[in-house]
Length: 440
Ligand code: UDX
Image (tube, rainbow, N blue to C red; front, side):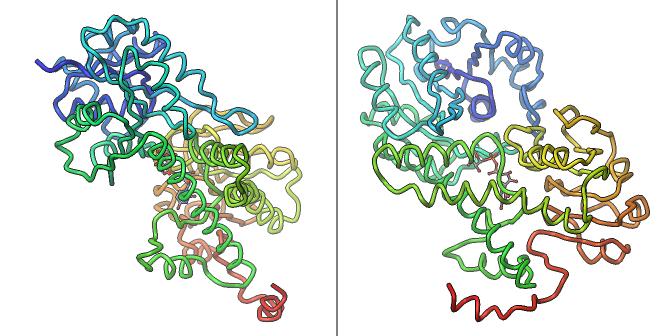
């Protein structure tokens, strides 16, 4: 019988590791400081929404491959490998709050392990963090930094199908024990130092975020020049050196990772007297983008005061019910500040903090009983709704598609004014673009 792998933290990352490792045939012990979460997990109720996760959890509980514990000693003592996947949220100055990680390591230090353990940190941390932890625990454990690249909504699938496995370590035998767990995946493994592994994680997310900000800048330029960002970005993305992933313009990136990780990289750069311009610009573009969507809506409506705005989507992206750092919420808040009331529908989010006078409804069409409609999450089901079904509901006949998910011609054919992101419907602007280029 193999020793169990212990997972500390049952959020997206911890659960993806737990279910993924169980799928690969390993016995898993899950632990969380939240006893009510453990209680639900034992009853087969996952802490978040993801296709297939409930079935997978219930299958592994029934076969006895996964057990959940509210006592860290019981969860960890027989494990040779302990994976730590706790949150590292942003502090006000952009630095990562490592308190939950330090608390988890502190708790582990009191466990009487049956054999010398290897601790694997999977939480995102600033460069240098895991070397410090390794020094502090070298008398009782080895330490590996193995970042995750999981996306919400497909975390278990991503765990089982990674582009690469990154292992930051100073001791080859500890690294091999960890990599053996994932051998069946047959993926390239990057063995490197812990600091390099931390930089790989932070810089990968910073680059993806930069790509989205770039796509948004290009789309805004298309809007002004009367061009179409769908074609422009498609043309750019075909270049294999660039690639088409993460080149979709919209309301900006949200969620618990990107903003936090870019801020953390900017903070690290500044701390070391290095330029943080690229990180800072990525964030600046991202926080301006929701305002742009609002300005487009306000331009079409002339005034938002006392207007009723139908909102499709609140989750930070499609496929999740997560509204953490969702720019959709920021837009809804700002609309409230400009005097509008919102009627909001999201297929997965049913409760959210909304401005006074605004409410959630239970169907997409109900949310079109409004003056105008804005689309704020890229749920594909929105595109499947025939615009003729809601055209006459919208009193001012305006649709602002902040995610470019709707078919612009079908919306326009239904007699509605359609505005997307970089999907100019106005034709070229009057000023001479060459003259502007010379000024640059
Ligand atoms: C991200 C990283 O992709 C993942 O590798 C890391 O481990 C955690 O952070 P996640 O936060 O789940 O994953 O979401 P992701 O799918 O990357 O999207 C992030 C945000 O960017 C969403 O708001 C999404 O709508 C937006 N986005 C994404 C765009 O606006 N355009 C794109 O082209 C892609």
